[in-house]
Length: 315
Image 1 (cartoon, rainbow, N blue to C red):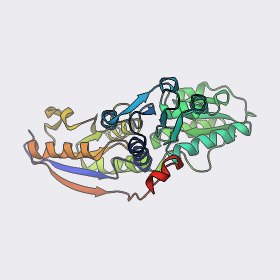
Image 2 (cartoon, rainbow, N blue to C red):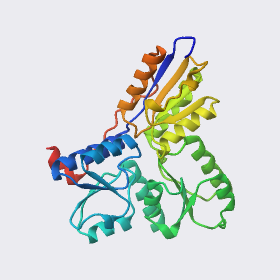
Image 3 (spheres, rainbow, N blue to C red):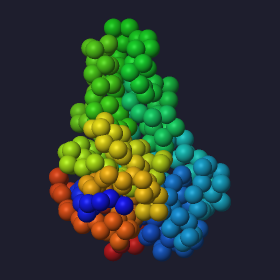
Image 4 (cartoon, rainbow, N blue to C red):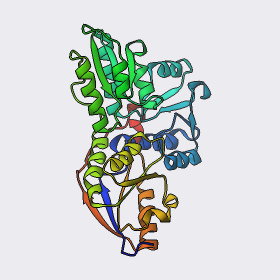
């Protein structure tokens, strides 16, 4: 146990973003309106607690549209889906509810526009991520995934090639900027989106960690391992030469992390529920005498409307 009293800084903003709130609200309403089972294409959001809670209520998470019975109810997750998935749902006569985050939809529309105008799209993102799969599905023949600076160097396009770049919405702002700069250096003719793709919530949470970690010794990020934006928060803290751990719950905190530590920063990824943050604070308060200071870096007042398929339920 630390010799000194533990000082806990609670980052704000943290936790659920507007897109996650909208997706969770959609699934909650769908279960109440249609009853179980409601099928969800992939995880509704990348968080174990949220997925397990909805699973207990009758949500069924599927990897393929073919797993959903014909004329069943299928909800698209916050990460978005490709046109091929939408077509497969129509062919099975499914009642589809689109809970895609509007900021992800923006990237999809950009991909469609660039491909229609004859551009080859260089998508900066992580292979296998649900959002990347959906975006690439909009123009698979016209899209190349760029994950690293080495990928940029390996690209083979002529100076006359029509090129455009897009980014996954949950990337590290710094890493994305490095890749965009590398692309511009190699291909000065490349074009980008009118407004950047990395979402406001991702940027705000990263900014909070970058600024507040300067005042702490240890950073705890609440979020699941498959959450891209949560992973980026831990990486940013480590880039500040801080010890940082991505955890799903208070039970994962190891006593040795707190040895010689009297200042801890707690934050949460955009898909992590607030209850896990509070459980973490409760444990640190009870076992280490922790006291909490709230630090607000940005105010967030963004709200996304629920999709039209569920609006009659809300009135």
